[in-house]
Image (cartoon, rainbow over all chains, first blue to last red; front, side):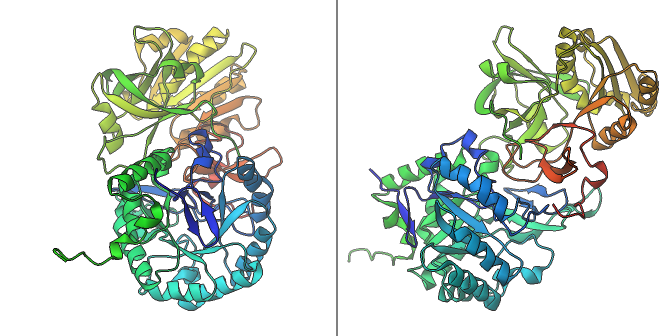
Length: 313
Length: 282
């Protein structure tokens, strides 16, 4: 038996496999293909205070082993989400990590206040790194000080019970310093990585293909970036739990992120190609852990950081 | 928010046959019992490129027709134009190949309970799902006229066996190389003025669907159209295939063409805002 259970802060999950925010809508569609109770948790699409149309179409372009998207946080707004989407997930007995996104420090705090009183939530993901916003200056996770202020505001509003997971961007010069900043400000865990800012130019129109011009790259193309980010941050902050994500499409990929230091792994773009991908990945992971002699996920977390055993020693 | 087609499931199907028909491929897949839940207008999402493909997204194709009878049991017909990398791969799959697919997805064309006079309008290979629809309408006692249009004759898909289900088939090409010269939308105002049509079913490029919606506006003619927007997932989780749609209260929402479509009421789509973001707040 392999113990697949994991923790993020004080939240316990029976499996280390999660959906990725923005890649599962609010869970209902995936439930047509998988049993939501079998995975660690559903991480919901980042929700803002008000309903939002998002960015113009085209919103997507496939790239080699990846895709770029510019959805722009289309969503129903927090009130509608808490009235309809969340109770449905809770009624299915799915574990839920609610993801929030705001345009100001105050908006994040307001969202946290509303989420605090909702039952059935395991943790709060604070998405400070969505690349698809009009003003790149508003990507909090690109600025150490702004990142800290958002997490500080959420922590103060939320009190100490619900774990806060700060979702960070790989598009920064010094990820470790931003990670340290948000942990100091009260984040219990880190979600690494959000999509990578990118662009595709359409050769027919000879203009940027996406309506929003730039988008976020996801899929296997970015997996090595995720592995690097997780490895660097785990090395600097070995006690801080990391929810890893970025191009995971197989059990092998999930194990790679775990070895780099992730306690949980989110599956995002792979679900677009196969809505049951998360279940196959979970089964493959279990097998790969067994083959390597691990009896639990916990034993494998950060294993890549151990020094080489010296031959003959 | 609409709900995912409750009959959708993922299966591995076998290619029964793959024939070239002009510029298109007619691909027949053995899908078994799934055909019982496939309706005209529904689509299928197919994994392309094989095991180690760098193409990570499924490709959506309209289901052209399904048949329960035949030597292989339930089969699904697709009409595919080998233009992109994914469709080229699908068209290269020989008899006996395995195809990973999810179906049936999306909404279906509404079938009237009373016999009506139906006009089916197809642009390019948009005609594919209309032949399956024509059979269903014909069996309900409807009069079925079909108008197909394309830039040139080579892009018209109109198989001989499909013609059996329609009363009148007219073809329009912009270069005059097949049928009448002109656009397929040109005769529609006359038909409406003469009261010869109750319902228009359309499938094809978005500008054609928009033109038909504008023609029927103000008349009693119902226009059901199958929209085209590029999709990443086909199952409602990626939010890329949205377009602005108003409900009966005039409330505008960005609806997913994979869940609330592909078949939509043309009168509800805000065609001028496709590719834009509404200025009013949601």
